[in-house]
Length: 145
Image 1 (tube, helix red, strand yellow):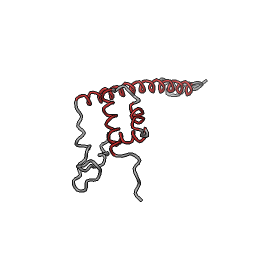
Image 2 (cartoon, rainbow, N blue to C red):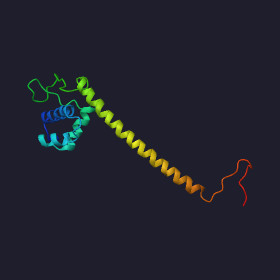
Image 3 (cartoon, rainbow, N blue to C red):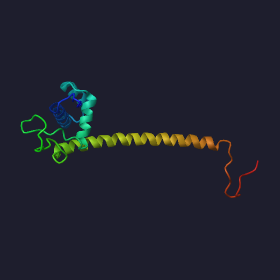
Image 4 (cartoon, rainbow, N blue to C red):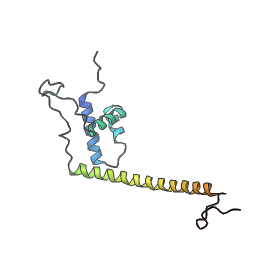
């Protein structure tokens, strides 16, 4: 028996397109996926999966017939595909802004990690040198008590 899909291709396409449009219009809104999932009555995780497949180019949706009802046999043309996803200036600017925000967060994380490593190195240095005599390079050996 063939697995029946829970959501139609039209719902998938519409939900993905709505998320993409809202991301362009509201780049700082982090709840778009949840809101669109509620609007289309789909699972948020399903919508995230559809978006991920769309973003990496592996999701061409299903092919539509000229009458818009699914499988068109030999005359298949993808409704959304890798070659058809050209980004305009607004999309590119929104993507640049998103990437710049990610860079800021990563730089903050990097500074925090550098501080932690420095503190740990200082603690290790103190722990390994406490009670240990450091060799005197002028004598060539460690001093005797």
